[in-house]
Amino acid sequence: MYRQQELNRIVASLLSNNSILVVGEEGSGKTTLAVAVVEKLEQDGFAVINCEPTTPKQMLKEIAEHLGVDTHNIDGKALTTDKLKRAIAGYLENNTVFLVIDDAHNCEPKFRGWLKYLQRQRAPMLLLATRPPKSDVFINIPRIELAPLPEYAIRELMEKTALDKGINLRPHDLARLQERAGGNPMLAKRSIDEEFLGLDIETGDHTRYFDMTPVILLVGCAFIVMRFVALGTNNVALYIMTGATGALFAGASYAMRALPKEDKRRL
Image 1 (spheres, rainbow, N blue to C red):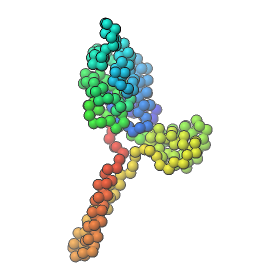
Image 2 (image 1 turned 30 degrees about the horizontal axis):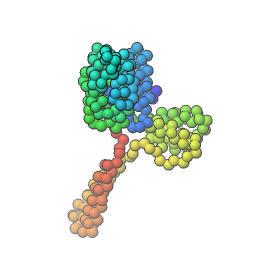
Image 3 (image 1 turned 120 degrees about the horizontal axis):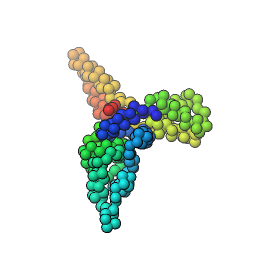
Image 4 (image 1 turned 90 degrees about the horizontal axis):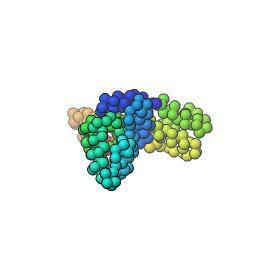
């Protein structure tokens, strides 16, 4: 388990009756982490409901059935969505149950609004999402943002995957494939699959990019200094050249800010 620290933090948060949100790019290991959390809590004897987004009615019915909450009234008619919500919320007020929802960003807004209500009622839950909106339940819950796995972990994962497929990779081959993965375990496994199939892929799908903005700003500042020198020496040609070049660098700087950058935030 490469994300043992995150696992410990999540379990500790849930056991203290708090909710937590795990955010990471596709393939960063959120589902693997969720499974590990569920297994840990169940081994310790806790009740856990692990569900994935479907329609609100289906999710509510699944949760109710896990809890043993009746989904029909005394006349045998199925409870409405609102009545199911009230029945489940009432059960959770008096019982400790951990709710785990993977890909929570795919849940419908009304369902997320209900999760927000549960969170305010101190029902402990673990939500896992990719680029969740900054609204409803996501804005209320403390978050852990999954960093890319370290190089040694990606290399070990790739070596194991290659061994399972009977591929003998040389160190420089591993280094080439590892660069394509960008710290993403899913992409690391996929790169081995692509190598196994003989596919020649030059670039990866990860979202980690080197931020060139500081370099551009530094060069722009240098041209500004040169412009002042041109003013002091009354050099018109140098003044015009540095002014025009400085404007180009300023525009490039604004353009670079629009590119995706690796998020550095941690819990």
